[in-house]
Length: 450
Image (tube, rainbow, N blue to C red):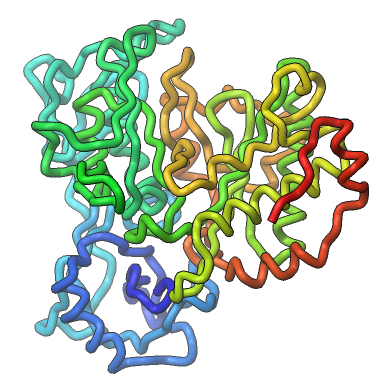
C-alpha cells in the first residue's frame, strides 16, 4: 500500500516446504477488482513475511504481510533470469485451487523469429512473411521497418526495434510511469527529422493509452498504465517518455524529486559522479532514499520518492522549495563546483544543480526511456556501486540495455523507499549551509527563499 491505498500484490509459489517470492503484480487492479479484493486481504493479516529465499522482499512500512492462503490467477509473459514473473497482471482470485498446490508453471516453448541485432524474441510477437514481426504484444505496427535511428555501424534501428525494446523493459518501466501524465516526444521521420512534443490526447489516440484529466485543463492528458500502451506509443514513433513527478493517480500531489546534474562542457563526467554521490548523502542525512540513473545525455539524475500528508498540507510549491533549498545548500558549500543559476556565462567549470523539474507540470525523462540522439542512448537506472569513477553512460543503449537490466539490481526497493517529506523538511531546516549566503551571491548563487 501507499498512503493507505492498495498498490500491488507480492506473490509467491510453493517450492518444497517453502513459499518462494516470484515478484510484484501491479496491474489489473481496476476499482471494482480492488473493492472485491481488499476484504479478502484484510481477513488474513500476518505479522511476519511468509516468503523465504534470496529474493524475498524486506519488511517496509508500506508492506502488509498476509498468511499465504489466497490463490490469485496471474497472467504473465515469462520469467526473468532471477526467477521473477515478467509483465504480470492480476486476473482474479481462485477459490477452486488450494494454496498448497500452487507451484511454478512451466511455460510453453515459445516460437522464435530472426529479428534485428536487439535479439529480442517474444512469444507474443507475430512474424510477417519476411520473418520480421509486425505485431508486438498483440499490437499491430504499421511500417515496422521505418528507420528511427541512423546506421551507427551496426545497422539502423527501426520502429519495430523500438517496440521490441519497450516490450523487453515494460515490466520494469511501467512501475515508474503508470498513474502519471506522460509527455511523449515523437519523431515519425527519425531522430534527424521533425519532433513533436505531445502531452494531450489527440483524435485517434489508441485505446491502449489511458486518458487522464488534470485540474485547470479541459483537454485530457496521455497516461501509460499498461505494457501494451508502450507498444501503442512505439506505433506513433514515441521515442522519449517524460512523466510527471506526481504521486501515481494523483496529479495534484508531488511524489518524487528529480535532481538533474547538468555539467558545463568543460566538466568531466567523473565530477558529475561525485555530485550524484553528494546529493545521495545529503538526501540520506534528511531521511530520504536516493536512486541514480543516467539521463541518456551528459548528466545524471538522482531520484527520491516521498510521501506527503493526505491533508494536502504539503503541495508542489513546498516540495519545489525543499528541492531548491537542498541544492542551494550544496552550492553554498562548494560554489567553485556547483551553482543553481542557469546563466551560461557563470557555468564554466561547474555543474548546474537543476531543481526546476520538481514543479507540478514539469517532467523528467523516465527510467529506461530511449533518447532521440545518435547511438540510441537510454536513461539507465544504476546501482550506487556503479556510480563511480570511470562510469561510461554511452554503453547504455537500445541494443544493450535489455540484457543489462535483466541482470541488474538497480533501484531494487524503490517502490518501498517512500519517506515522509515533512520529516525531511524539518531535518533540512536544521542543516545550515557552511558558507554565508552573502558570500554565495558573488559566485552566482541566489539567496535561499522560503
